[in-house]
Image (cartoon, rainbow, N blue to C red; front, top):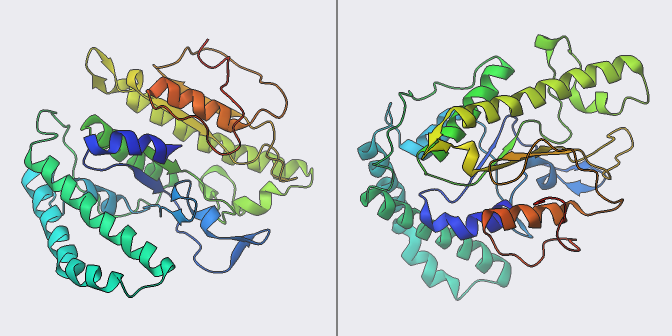
Length: 315
């Protein structure tokens, strides 16, 4: 869904979409039930076979947005983009000559690389036209690294996303608060145990209580995200007034790996709020995604296993 939306709006911003997370990916082997780790490492795919990696270092996020200077400086941003383009251009000509001698799989990878060259060229053109020059940004210095506190870390990554949208550098972002099959522990809230083993609690009351603490902490970060967006002015309202935010998890009951009846939270000024909607049994979540894209003005006829729109969504 995010990349279908980015496809429509990406040409209007310097960065088509941001893919952020808080945990390093697992890079080898199968991570769960015989599936590749690619399925646990990201929420976002540019094609059925191309996962988009998440960025987990706030400093790297800042530099992607604003260059390698220490402030939100347009000249620094443009200089970094030109350096990236010159490096890519250096090998682009050779890559094109090589294309005719490659097999189908390698040719696809090369095409994706050349698309990256074109994307950076578009971003340079937008900066040169002063794409975000009219937006007055708050004072924000480049992060030095990853904060020790989980909550401070999450807040920093959320602040960067809000900043990117405030400056209209991007209009699409995905954020993995917790990676699938996560081994993270949370001693700051009294949970020294790894997250994933706790999710297979087997009905143990102590494990369920600890898992509840983790879930609560994660949803508090969603609340912070909404708070920051509602506090950020845009036009006559707030950034949240012009945005849709969806939050949730991949499983309703992780102890049984049950992915049905998922609890999903949707907020933003483009839909009617203050509602709790119970949908019919076995309704695909992709029906709701189609309805969300309708609200955003993105026309898509179907996605995944969708069987129609969610009629109660826009009511």
